[in-house]
Image 1 (cartoon, rainbow, N blue to C red):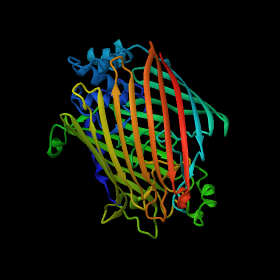
Image 2 (cartoon, rainbow, N blue to C red):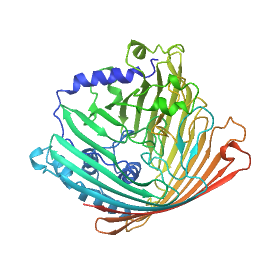
Image 3 (cartoon, helix red, strand yellow):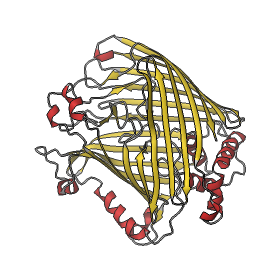
Image 4 (cartoon, rainbow, N blue to C red):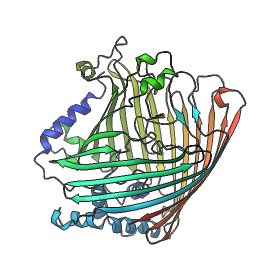
Length: 506
């Protein structure tokens, strides 16, 4: 399959040109669950950040510091200035590095404890998890809990504690570790490493190795690859700074960035498939997972990315040329394009991806379309996001990899699964003291071609507050109602979730 092979070719061309540029500082990444992404989206959509951020997350601390050092906060509303000041204080060393002309001598070593979290969540559910129907995808989903790095709540009380340690060892090496400790009445105590990686560079190419969540494309949830499943242990290569295409035919593409990662799937996939599918012997243990993505910023109000992610038995010329005849069926691909477009007072974004091919182009397409209004009021203290997604029947399933587009029992893309439609709406109110109140609604129709297909409605209220210096509160109350459970007409379940979390930043 040749779909978006150009992404790989572009990466090669950029790599040959970029070695001559001075290597910037290597820093750790901003965690995907950080509120920074909410406030950066807000600042960007309101025009305070001129250059649009690419659709490959996480961002490095240095990249965020660069945006903050370039923006002019004059006229910024009080509530947004609060968050701007918090980020500037946290990233003071990185901002000083940027403003002093990339002077690494001015950047001190900052290895240490970065944050600490304690969360209590109570779940009252008829059932804590649900399976996708039929012999298509061997995975599970949980109401009111998506894009949470594969973590699942038990019924009743749940206690989770996390520490984030790390920082810069020197200008060329950075380290981050996030151990997680949890207890619930279903699975009792558990300790795991939610995220942990080391980061360095060769020239302008950043190299990361370890366990790390990614979100490529999307805003609420990525179609191809996000943080719905447990993060992979991988090796990742990316440009530390966007590359300016200044010459040649492709100069109209403006700035470009490249991300490539390699990982492997679980070693017990065949055993998992044995109780799930009569075709379990087709499954591959330790299948390869390769992701390639190139993002472009042709204008400061427009960015788009092309992406190909492959789960495959092995690397050969067929994968490069796209000869994936049904008799061989050596790999499963999801590939496509996503974009964001900014106008005054509104931002449009979308994804168009395919999980199959016809004539070397993506087919069996799925899409997401979204619109973000950052200023429902003149000062932006109210904003609104509307989003819809649709997948086709073949999505996330495969003839050879019979467990599907699944890692550690979760879909690696959107938890709604294949043959589904999902609508999201969220509205936020920002208070002058920096606190935020949010309301969200989500409606999902699962596996729509089945008789009496299952559907779900989710409602949630979120509140975030700064209690004192470096101490933050996050609270959520959510309710979900499921109809036609297990595709049985009229069968209903519901779930109520109440969560309170405290975070200390150091």
